[in-house]
Amino acid sequence: MPELPEVETVRRGLADRLAHFQIAQVEVCRSRAIASPGGPEQFITGLKGSTVGDWTRRGKYLMAELQPDRSVWGVHLRMTGQFQWHATPADPCPHTRVRFWNAAEEELRFVDVRSFGEMWWVPPGCPTEQVISGLSRLGPEPFSSVFTSTYLQQRLKGRSRPIKTALLDQGLVAGVGNIYADESLFRAGIMPFTPAGRLKGQQLETLREALVTVLQISIGAGGTTFSDFRDLEGVNGNYGGQAWVYRRAGHPCRCCGTTILREKLSGRSTHWCPTCQA
Ligand SMILES: [Zn+2]
Image 1 (cartoon, rainbow, N blue to C red):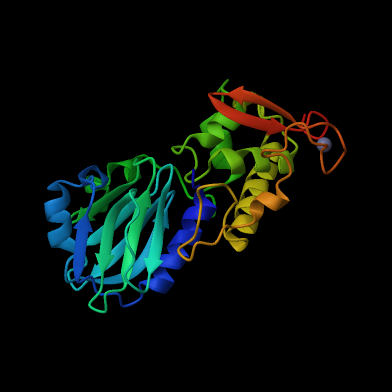
Image 2: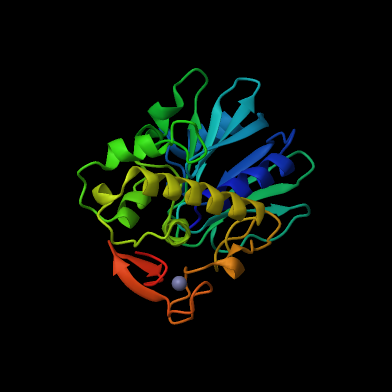
């Protein structure tokens, strides 16, 4: 599943490719890909004729401002959603969900094998959170000034759930998924099963720093390598090659040589080093 760095990579790709892209034609191949009121019909009417402006990211949501009416085009990739750029006409694959063309017949294509990806059109003047309701439940961005160790301490106080589970909660911090939770806990030297409320201020500060660093490294590398993530040009990111624990169960820790362990935690595979993480 794409996490913050992958979604940020997609945001940059869309911003590059779609600068001044004027949407001449839209085709919705699968209606459930459109989650906003009015369904595909209003989505198509809203986007057609608009010029794509700036792209922003909030958690794993992507939003483009459309000109001239300043309506908003929202996207969530969910499990397997991906964008493809086709400079010349090409036959759509069976997993094609939504297609966008400009007058030059260049195509942006949304392909989604598992079909959980969603798009929204937010009418001009309408609060974005009203249409894309998931936005209102998001915690702070990991890079924002409100995401501090004090914030974490307040939110995690008295909580017995494991810190790994807490990090996956989008209401605590936006955009973190399985890979970056495991990698940042390794970097911080914290056992994933540690009850969240038991972590001290300094440990939470180390964890915050580790999370920000791991995310920044991955954004620089273009997102993690995993089977279904491609950027717009079809290129895999390469963070996977640098992973310390994620998908390394049974291999020696790159730091101390101890065998990396894996166990299910809240339904998600969790990887850690029993020596480096206490
Ligand atoms: Zn180790």
